[in-house]
Image (cartoon, rainbow, N blue to C red; front, side, top):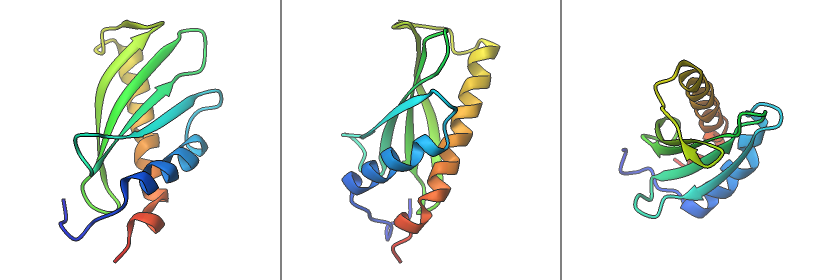
Length: 114
């Protein structure tokens, strides 16, 4: 991470909470939280729309003001852990990862404080 990159984590959480729904699928919902262990990271919980009741937890770590590393933390279905290797899960993870990257790009106006 670039040492000159420094942004208030609470401001970042609020910006993500407002911006992320624009990138999600219709009916999906998300909650964005500060990562208590890493000030350069956010935790994102996404509830997928539909009858499958999938939920996804991601860690998004800023590498620089524009780029994030997205890591899948957990996938659940109706509150039970599921095998993340299943094709349907991998497709959803790829889709949500893309949306998270798009959101980070859109927030460049906030994160680029140089």
